[in-house]
Length: 261
Ligand SMILES: NS(=O)(=O)c1nccs1
Ligand SMILES: [Zn+2]
Image (cartoon, rainbow, N blue to C red; front, side):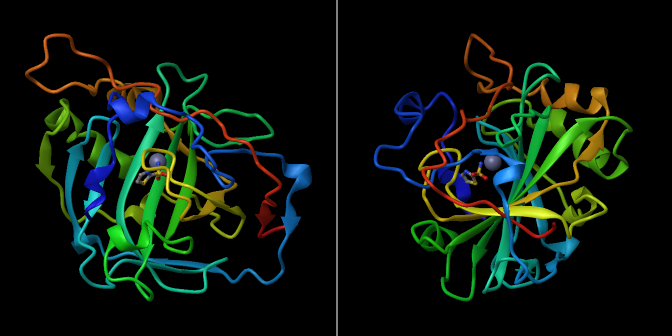
């Protein structure tokens, strides 16, 4: 999908305000569990992904993105807090230089070593990602926490190609990958709130759906994430791609709803 405008962490704009001026629904946030409100109207979440829409992996200088062909409704997300059908366009991760931190969202201030984002746009209302990103009901992002544990066999297929996208702007073909394998066993328990993109342009267009259950990946798998570089092959000084997360943002009176009691 064309989320190519996602700027690198080094882009001048990103050096700018880490809190979007005038933003009152910015992400990420800390989820204070005792302040969440159960919403009995949430429907079961139904991700329906077609692995054949997977196309490539590329290093955009901020994270690595696994991109999906989003010209049809072949890989979609419906249900949960969502009224419309949302089309998968890409997924990516945020991680730290150590296992002690790396996630963008936190749960009662608990940090995870990494966080997966599956990015979808409202294809009932808009024709393109770029259009949807300007609208407050335009995007839906599923967040999944990663914790250190058993090796994740599904993730390994992606880890194996990461050396091919070590430098910024590198791309490698990547097909037949079902992102559902990266979802936790239990996708019925999640939190949802109205937020924003966590990288420029920080658009306040996102319905966040944060899974309660983390997935397990091995220390070695996360080490391969850290072997990626923010910098392109031509740059003299190579910078490890680590700590590519945004600082937490004020809740500003928002309510985080839960699908479970
Ligand atoms: N990290 S994020 O999922 O909020 C995102 N930023 C830009 C495109 S998708
Ligand atoms: Zn993200």
